[in-house]
Structure formats: C-alpha cells, structure tokens
Image 1 (cartoon, rainbow, N blue to C red):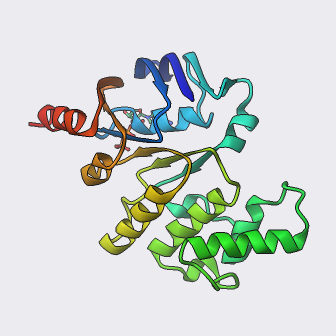
Image 2: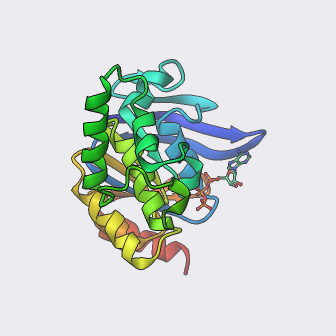
Image 3: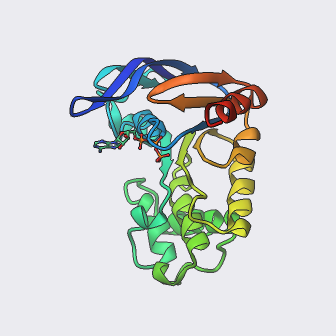
Length: 224
Ligand SMILES: Nc1ncnc2c1ncn2[C@@H]1O[C@H](COP(=O)(O)OP(=O)(O)OP(=O)(O)O)[C@@H](O)[C@H]1O
C-alpha cells in the first residue's frame, strides 16, 4: 500500500504538489496530466528520490523520509531515458551490478541475470556493450536491472516516450504481465486506459481519480 498523507511539495518557494492525499492499493495505476502538472515529482516521492516538503509518503508503512533505503528495496524506478540508469559497460555487468549487495554467490547472480534478460527479450546479450544497444533495447536493459531486484512496486516515469511503436508495444506487454504493483506516469492514453485506476494531475493537484474511462475523459476535457 502506497500512502500520501496531505503531501505538498515545493521547489524553492513554488508549490508543485498541493495537498495530495491518496491511498494506492490497486495493481495498475496510471498517472496522466499536462506537462509540468507534477507527475514526475509525484513518482519520485514514491520511492523517496524526493521527500515531501509537508506531509508524508509511506510504502507498506515505511516512511520515505526516514526509511528511504528500505523503501527503495521495495520500490523500483524506471526513468524515461535509460541512459540515466545504465551504469556498466556490458549488458550482463549492468544487471549484475544491481545484485552487488545481494550476498548471492557468483553462479546464482549469473543465473538470475540470464533469467531476467531472457524475460526481457535480451537473452544471450550478456557480453554486448550497453552502448551498442538500440534505444528500445536500452530501455529493456534498464528495466532488467530494476526487475532483477524483484521489487514489490515499480514506478515508471514515461518509460516509452523515447521508444518507437514496436518497442513501446513490447514494453507495454512486459509491464502488463508483471506480477507487482505498477505506477505508470504516461502521456500514452491507450496505455493509461489499460489500468485499474487513473489519476489525473493538473497544476499540482489530483483533479480526477477513478476508473480509466471516466478519468481519461476528464483529462481530455481539461485540454479542450
Ligand atoms: N528539480 C527541480 N527544481 C525546480 N523546479 C522543478 C524541479 N523539478 C521539477 N520542477 C518544476 O516542478 C513542476 C512540476 O514538474 P514535474 O516534472 O513534476 O511535472 P510533470 O507533470 O512530470 O511534467 P512533464 O509531463 O513535462 O514531465 C514544473 O513546473 C517543473 O518545472
């Protein structure tokens, strides 16, 4: 359960999230809204990349402000641009790097890395330099490096914005099949429609919250 208790966030003096109060327990939650409406700030609050100026954010009762490391063990985060999170020179090393503090022996790390790459259509690419991957493959690698840690929650901030249609569909399919709680910030309303609950942000507030049909219709109404 993700809980935002009267969360306000400011950058300097500017309020970008204004008294957001939510309990999120659905498996697939989509977040839509105009540029600058506060979606990324909201996403980053969930895993403690940002802590709120006022109010609190908890994940399974763990407070992001005081138990950030524990929260981040449960909550994986996928950025729009995979370059922001690919660290190691080769595909296999990058996924294995996520497990560096797992205490697992090397052979188990290798097995987990291979299994995760297989699940993301990157089988056999362990030794491929990360820089040689296509943009779509890079996003799959970034996702592999998050999923190998088996998070309970995955927060994705516009994960398909930089991808072509084929890779967008591929990432959608993979995200839809994951057995975890997914919070997906997206401008892709087809993708948002395929969720259990949609939050619509506008100027730092949640202005609609509910079933996809209703919430997306509200969002469309805002931009008319
Ligand atoms: N680190 C920061 N310092 C100052 N202001 C910021 C910072 N990050 C975001 N902002 C501002 O906060 C507001 C909300 O930004 P945020 O990125 O959360 O919106 P968004 O809905 O995700 O937008 P987009 O759809 O364009 O990604 C924007 O006006 C943005 O300029």
